[in-house]
Length: 133
Length: 387
Image (tube, rainbow over all chains, first blue to last red; front, side, top):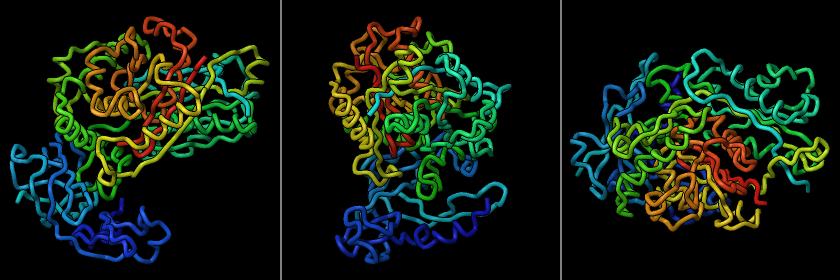
């Protein structure tokens, strides 16, 4: 698959955690959304870009052993749901630690890393991962 | 509005069928259903095909046309479209067929669900089943269906102080029932100890918590009350049908162990049927991962939130007060995704007519079927029988 444009298109969100804030109710969305699920029509044209701090805590996590081809060299990896201090929750890897150190509620911060490389095209795709604080 | 009856069903064996193609599987199930209903192809007014992944797995789309063509009815010119809603595609297709008849537009509708999954080898299948999640914000970062289920499982076990036994019991029960189902993918019984100690997949889930990669097809013939009577068939009535949505990605939901789509679809299905939980003789649950079995029993209202482990550790076998997955469920009957939801109807149709052989639930009059997409983005609930 030609992934170049789909990767490039999301780079501000994946590199710098650029979220969308609703100008109507002030809720923050990451991944970004063009319509606020609370305000619906009242949010149209009022979603504003904002950069998140990248700090938050682990809601839950797993250690993935059965991994897709693009992640074989990272096996096993910790995949977590992370609730960011600004409100939204995202899905990301927790790295630079032993899986046994990861626990529910632990504080984490985002780092910029190589996320995956895709087989035939060999394109290296970057984005956020998280480390324990 | 007319009532809708199932008047025929058919399915292939579920499993690794290296010598059978996508179209062969679909045609086998379809022919069995037509034979079982005792109708002719000219009676069929509309056909719904369902497949979750054929476009990426087999590089074949337009499954509706494929089914009509190789069932030999292309020249009849009847509408034949594919319904896709990830792993609930089959149940969603049955619902469309139900609506087509209920509206009065058609007298007879056919549904054919199929998935041919074993043509992809090794871990590449994870790229394909990963398309059932949010590709850009879950799968891109290493999410797999098992990993997302495991994330729900860990928080569930922590918050409700539930051990792994309860999840494993869902799989033990599936295998026990599948041992009595000749069409099941796995017919071996497993012990609780073996289930708990199997190969890790996504901690805390291991191999025995995960439904397999299966080939298979299932088909149904639905008919209006008038048509069913005209061919002397009572069939089994679809008492109610409901579908509901939730956010696509797990991280967007308020609770990662509450299936809002299941709560909504379940509630609507019971209300429309005018039935209570105590009226249900058996349930077929979408336990693609064992944790979902627990969450679904709760969110369908069969027990309080966090309490499914008590129900499951007590008894959910064929002779219990609430037999779960008499077919063997997704874990042991198998999970050929586009066929899975249709296969639940095949089981319901057999059970309510007392034709389920060794795995027959005694006095099975009312069955609840639950099918779900991915981590719970869509839930489809049907209630059968209700007499």
